[in-house]
Length: 143
Length: 143
Length: 143
Length: 143
Figure 1 (cartoon, helix red, strand yellow):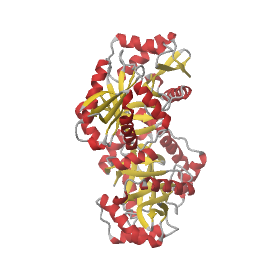
Figure 2 (tube, rainbow over the protein chains, first blue to last red; figure 1 turned 45 degrees about the horizontal axis):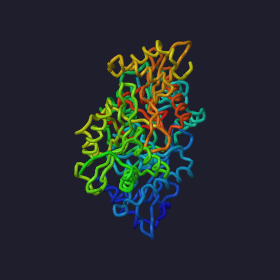
Figure 3 (tube, each protein chain N blue to C red; figure 1 turned 90 degrees about the horizontal axis):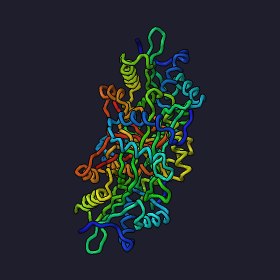
Figure 4 (cartoon, rainbow over the protein chains, first blue to last red; figure 1 turned 180 degrees about the vertical axis):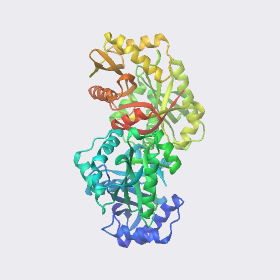
């Protein structure tokens, strides 16, 4: 299994992962959102970047991240907005590998930090994140 | 009291607010961070935007926000990264006015949403935010 | 099923439980840590004590605890550091029985209290603990 | 201001701090607990250690810690059980200095880690701890 940047020819393998991820969050997005997100992932000049886990040409998981400026550092920060591993491939450390690939990307981009949000009750995810990052004292508000 | 976008001639009034805000978080930033953040706040082409609360030429509070793309919408999202009201002006609804100005800015920018982080134990802040936004179930992880 | 103090001849049955417990926490310890922990569990003069749940000679769960002084009482306190039940034996009240055995041990040792840490998101564990102990308002910080 | 190990002749300065700390937790301990705790703090062979912040012979704050074995490491862990700064000396970084002295003590003792408990709603304390340590995902249960 390897992790690598997303490529324009990944669309067929990426879309079921994206749909599975949205189903996990019980979210339904309009088709044009998926179209634009895909376009941004493939655009090297976009702030949106994608990493996939692949084995034998099959995509098993994805990570989407946004590089954006922060007032707290001269370098950007990296927001890991989406992370998903297909259900049938759970338990193989793929999420860990994806986060490590995000960290490597952030380092290459000289990002000051990497942050992400997770449901406070998502035990499987948090038990992994607790080994890779700091659980801050922050909660998230949203309009 | 009015809220308005930050202007290049606000530097003198903005800096004590920025320092008070950083002291609240017990943070010390290198001077070049403050310089670059100020430059970004004044640059109309930057993704970093600032709003201040002013009365009689005196700045009483600030809000800094970042417009960045999101994979969940065709329009950007607005990250309210910093919010601060000078101690001597607390209790006058200035924070509320600043958040309302952020919402107005987000609407003008057609931002899909506004989000921010706050310490789970910051009772005064959260009691305000609970009247203006949804406390999500998300906690924040950070490398 | 019985609960009883760990014995030097339990090593073979204890080790898979210890490994399963560490895997749950996604932790990898150096072999000498396991060796020293085992030695401490078997040393009657050590502050480290172990209790196991056994049926027909098979070990189904473990509890490790540390007796240490506290500034709040003249008698020691009992820190329940590790608790684990093998996956195949879940749902049989074994964790409850182990905690009750820890309480009996603490009583015999005249320990002033028993305390332990659990992930805030560990729903199965907490729903049991809530019937046996008080969830305090404390969170844990660690360097 | 200096931080240093507690000494037998500190009793007079230590006792008001200890009482202030217990009042903060609305706790009343029997006199013999205080006597034994004091004796343990002064006993170099005890697992209980004390650090005080002093200026001009006046004690301004205290830290009590327990070195105890852990099943997760070959070296002991350091439990910071009590931390207190006299109200009149707050806002001078004394708590930070005490924690740094605890860290130095832990390093000298080759402790594997330092941990402590704090009320999840103790905003002043947590805003300091968040700059010095990791807020873990653990909550504390107690019998």
